[in-house]
Structures are given as structure tokens and as C-alpha cells.
Image (cartoon, rainbow, N blue to C red; front, top):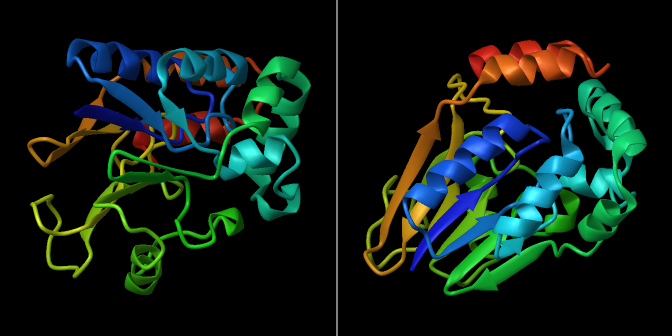
Length: 233
């Protein structure tokens, strides 16, 4: 099966549209989203509606949870909190209902999907160290677990010896961020996996960053949210 995995859209409509267009061109069987559809950007309703239309499976991210009251706003940094407060004024009721119904974790076709970590996903902890990864591997049994949350792409094997997918090992994979990359590359990121061939590739797609910057600056959202998109930080 050919699967695309997207994460951390953060209401960035130009990036999401470009990603979905590219995914269509490579003929995948399914698209999964590992959360944080909203937050930071000015297009929450448009992004949710595209995710509803195109994704086979979607899990809840911490910004999604913050918007519906399942995560405390005090847990977010100043920019994240201000963006969520702005989004609360703009979001449609039916889209709030959609976010409220999202699960924290999905396991299908020997793949687990979760936003932060499969170990206590409701706590929204980050996988940023080897100890974090060890704990994560103990919490899923599938061959692959796709995560987001850090906005930084990575591939980790269960014995930490490999950073590429090979048969016979289990993998924890972060696909990076569609709408808020933080690895120094402003290109929108997503993951592509062929489960028949055991092939995984991180894909980066350029999109019209200036359109997104102008939209943020005209929306009343904090201006720093636009400037960080230029350098992918």
C-alpha cells in the first residue's frame, strides 16, 4: 500500500494545498494526518475541511486539543496561545465538532499514527532524546509508528542503528511539518511509505510562502508567526 502521512498543518492553507496536489500526482492509496491541523495560521476552517475531504485517518494534535478545551491554554507558549485564542473566534461549530471526535491514536495496516508519542499520548510529550524514543517503542507493537509534534523529520530504528527503513526492524518516523517546518528548511514536509516495498521517503515541497506571510500579517495574528516561515524555524 502506498501511503502519505502529513502532520502539523497549523492552518497553513497554501502549504496544505500544494502538498495535497503533489500527493495526488504520486497516486497514493491513503492519506493519514498525525494532528495539529490548526494553530499559528489564519486558515483553520479551510484546512480542516481539506483534511476531512482527503484523509483516511486523522489523530488529534495538542493544538487541536487546545482549541476544543482538551488541553490547557497555559501549556502553550505565548505565540501558540495567542494563535489559539484568535482561532477560537474564527472556527466554525461543525469544525469544532470534527476536532472533538478525533482519536489520540490509530493503528491500521501494521502502522500506528499518533501526534506526540504513543507513550501516554494525552500528555503531549516530545520525542527528542533516546530515552523518549525507547519509551515510545515500548508503547506500540506495529512495524511503524508515525508521529509529529516536534516539526523536525527523523527516522529511528528500534535498536537505534539505522536511519532508513529496512525489513525486519521497527521504526519511529517523524514526517516533519506541512505548515511550520522547524529544521531550517522552509519547504513543506510529508512522508511517503510503500508498505509492500518497505520503502520510506521524506518529501519536501516548495510552496508560496509569501502568500502565507501576507495572510498572517493581514489577519491580526502575531507577526513573528509569518517571519519564522521564511527560514523554517
